[in-house]
Image (cartoon, rainbow, N blue to C red; front, top):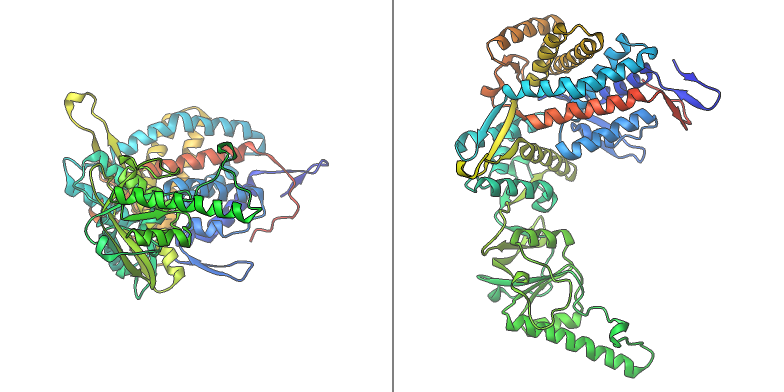
Length: 558
């Protein structure tokens, strides 16, 4: 049903929002879970996309309906923070809208908005407290082995829907080798933060026979070749500077050194000025034993000749992101202005080696920073897959996994300085829809205690929505297709009985009930909470919108 007014305003009722969300849900619902199927999309330009990643699929769509665009933008914003959760987001939203369309009428929109607001402010904090009581917390300082196992479980949970079990275990081993678990808590958290925020700089995608062949390199890779390279000077000890502006610099009119190239005499003066400036820079480098220059801008041929005569190696046209991450890793400053007499200590970088390597047929430079005050940088991941498309897919999956790792840990500060140092803790929840089943059970019991209709109805709607998400997972992982509803209800009864004794069960890869802690499938609590929070925020926005202006084409929902 589509209601319109004479002013060009189209009324947006519950059923229309439900249709749009159901259309989006149908694209990814079969790909939800460890046995999820791939989705094939063909773009308007003829490009074929095969992916199991919800965010990738949604971003490839050209959606005309405003509500659809609103949902996709909300998912994109959420996954930029969490890296994962797009499928659970759309599944939960669709389930909620379905129950709202069944229980509420358009005249009760105000009552519904009050119920959503009440849930967000009062019931959701209680739900979080209940979930945290059932979570697992591991400290890096007190139990390093359990902390590492928690990392493995989070990685396994994220990567299982995309790759076979044996490949997943190989990737887990590769990813974990990039982290140094012997670091103090605050430095370990900084290390995870660095690779999460700069993942593209610590990864190299290469064509290879198998995803399992992915490996790591111990130092930072600059994906540029040397402009000038001296083997004998860069094998053991390297002192280098990083430039972000041209050595020739800009000539300011305020200095009365502005040269207008109108005569041969002016041209000669200009060239002499540039030559003196370059030679002075090379002399400063020689005096301070600088044997490598890394520049984000191009260096002229004459400048390269000057550096060659002074035995100074050069790498130019380096990406600004690479220069910035080297600055962060070494805790040094880049040079943006021409030095007067010498470089400061904060501008001189030190590396144990700087060598030329060939990666995927492309010449690169491998730099190994060293020295005091070095940031806890990670190794470089070399991602291998048979095609470029599979390389990009592997990159997306691992980036999603790294974000989940980062969100699973937090730094717990001591209440007083006497109690000791800060501790890095991993807070996780069992996977296999354990969180959704736990929330459904909690909200169902909570709704029975309340007599106020608005509060109990919204709690029941959320309880049924979470249960619907768990039912979708059960459908996707169950091997048999007959009597799935009956099988799910029997398992649900077993789950509720087990929860009385603080035993929390979920669905494994075959749809059988297991304690997911023992199965090694864990998910970050913060990701789960953030997904629910984003769903409720978007739901409130959609419910508060009852009209659209500017829709040109009628939406067809299949």
